[in-house]
Image (tube, rainbow, N blue to C red; front, side, top):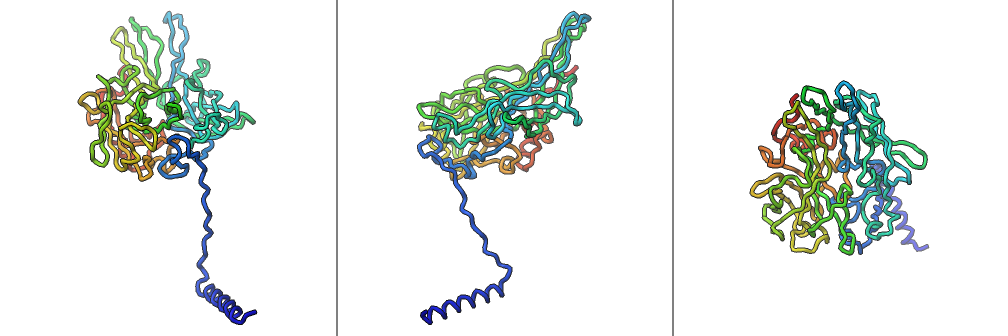
Length: 443
């Protein structure tokens, strides 16, 4: 062996021993190369939405995790005939629930919903779910989408609502949600929500007691809004709205915002005097829209009650989720002359306008990847939303707006049916809700 090589080897061994002796606590970390899920580059609007990137709210292969933005509960009255009153009287209320859980579920899986108070189960509902396993979809855009697999109550349907399963009294209750496995009937607890059920009594002329109406108050949802990005599916098709109700769009932006209001009576729209529009700015600079920034709006879900008192005018109370479709493009979705979040990053602010007045102000930040940044309530895992959905900052005018019939700040009541606010940003937003109108019926 060459002497120079021998001396070199000895020198290396000596230096290695010396270094180990001098610095015994230093450890060289093992660096693992992350696995990046493959994305079909040909899929419109998804080619650059790589799952796992911070701003995309991408599919995370979540299993048995509730989609909090999809959840909606209603308290439906249950009545029985009473001879003394010569008509129906109230027996109580039954719960109906719209639910979606992320995860890959076998056929015949479903949900179990338990209404409880002080740890005691009062009503239990079982329902079969509709499973979505994207790997089995014949549509390439669906198969390659960054969405999570999921299971939901049937499209347009609910879980519960049985008149034979009911709770007798109004009050505050826990709603414990379980997923049930279609292969072995195993149950997994996935979320506990909280509801506050109120009674709207009916007094017929002559002070005769009639059937009560019931409703779940949702004042805590007033400052809660989220933005949803809907990719195109090819051939001019657009993915369905967040709640799977099939709302289409006549605009090219495919950017939706969902928000809640408390108003008197339900209608297909939120009660705008004319065609609603948005006035937006990015980093303080006003952006221009086609069609004067007009937006499309619709009612998504609602829960209302009627209060009738001995011949006096009927009073109404209702809590509704509304949808607006904005003329904003995102990451290749939409080719109109409307603003595009990919090229206009930074602080977005949009006023939803009814004529000359603002009814809501929405704010979000778009990062360098062209996607909105997730709210701290999402990044902490406190709440869970579908891919492409982002909780956004919401401001309500100081005296409420023309569409707000009732407002009541409830910062301690949390969001999405009692999930406590965890972030300073969320707590501030909830505390900023003004007071307007009478929150409850007066007996």
